[in-house]
Image (cartoon, rainbow, N blue to C red; front, top):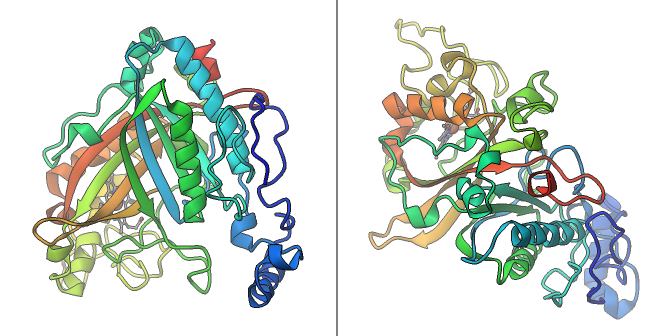
Length: 421
Ligand SMILES: C=CC1=C(C)c2cc3[nH]c(cc4nc(cc5[nH]c(cc1n2)c(C)c5CCC(=O)O)C(CCC(=O)O)=C4C)c(C)c3C=C
Ligand SMILES: [Fe+2]
C-alpha cells in the first residue's frame, strides 16, 4: 500500500483502497466469507497472489457526506472510541477551522477504507482491512465557542446540564472543547482512525479524555438482535427508529432551527455510567426483571407480549399490583410519562479492568442523541433521579454535552457553516 501525502479537500476523490492489492471491497457476503476461508487454508492472499474478497463485515461502508453526520442514525458498531480534546492555549478560530478541515479529510478517506491523506505517514494499522462500517462523528463542546471567539453563535441548547443527585462526576473525564466518536466493526480499523485523528490534532488540540467501548460483533447471533448491555438486558428496544414518522424531529435540528448552522445536526449527551455488577449479580432474576420492567431472556415487557410489544403501563397482575412496577426503569423513562421526551440511545459497553476492591470497572458509555437536550435527556434524567429502581446499581462518573453539526456536503468540511459562516 502507498502512503498518501498529497493534501486534498474533503470533497475531492481520494486515493486507492487499502486493499487495492488484495481484491475489491464490493465483493461481500457468503461468497466473500467462503473465499476468505479458502485463502486462509492456502496461506495469505498476498502469498498466493489471488484476490480475496473481504467478508461482509470488512466490506461494509458508510457514507461520510450527507445531511447528517454518520454515526448517529446508523447502527452502533462493535467497537467504539469516544475522545474529547481541548484546544491549545494559543489556538483560535483559524487554527480550529484548519483542524476540522484536516479531520474531515482524514475521516472521509478512512471511512472509504483508504489511508488518511495529508502530511503524516499512515501507521498501517488497518492495512489489510476494509472500511468495516467505520464512522467518525465530530462535535463542539460549550467551551469551544469562548476559545474561538464564537460565543455569540453558541446554541442555547449547549447550556451546561443541570446537576443530578446521582452524579459522581470526574471533571477530568467530562466535557471538552471538541469531541469525536469513532465506531467500526473491526477493532484495529477503529483504533487506526482514532490514532490518525489524534495525530492530526497535534499542536492544535490535546486529548482531554478518551474512552473505549464495545458492542456485539456482527454475525455473533443467528440473526440480527437488539444489543445486550453488561447487566445482561436487551437494551435499545424502544429506541426511536429511522422509519418512525417523528424520528427526524426528535433526533435532528430542523432547517431554519436555531442556530441555523446546526441544521441537520444533533446534540449528544455522553455519560460514563459504571454498573455495580457485584451487587447486581446478587439480585435474583425476577427482581432484576422488576427493576427494568422487561424479561431478561428476550426483552419482552412484564405487561406481556414479545420484545416489540408496546409496554402496557396500566396492566395489573392478578394480585392487583402493576405488572410494570412504579419505579421500573421503563416506566420512569417512557415518553408517555415524560411529556413525550425521547432520545436515540446509541451506547457502547466498556470494561477498563478491575478496581482496587476487585469490582469490575465496567458499564455503559451512554450516548443519547436528540434535537434538544432540554426536551430529551434532561427531563428523563431528572425523573430517573427521583425514583428509578436501577439507580441503586449504577453510578454516573463522567458527563458531557456536545453540539454535533449537520453532515458535510461534497467539498465541505464538518463545522464549516459555523467556522466560516
Ligand atoms: C436519561 C436517560 C437514560 C439513562 C441515563 C439510562 C441508563 C440506563 N438504561 C439501562 C437499561 C435500559 N434502558 C431501557 C430503556 C430506556 N432507557 C432510557 C433512558 C435512559 N437510560 C429510555 C428513554 C428508555 C426507553 C423507554 C421506553 O420508551 O420504553 C431498557 C429497556 C429496553 C429499551 O427500550 O431499550 C433497558 C434494559 C441501563 C443499564 C442504564 C445505565 C447503565
Ligand atoms: Fe435506560
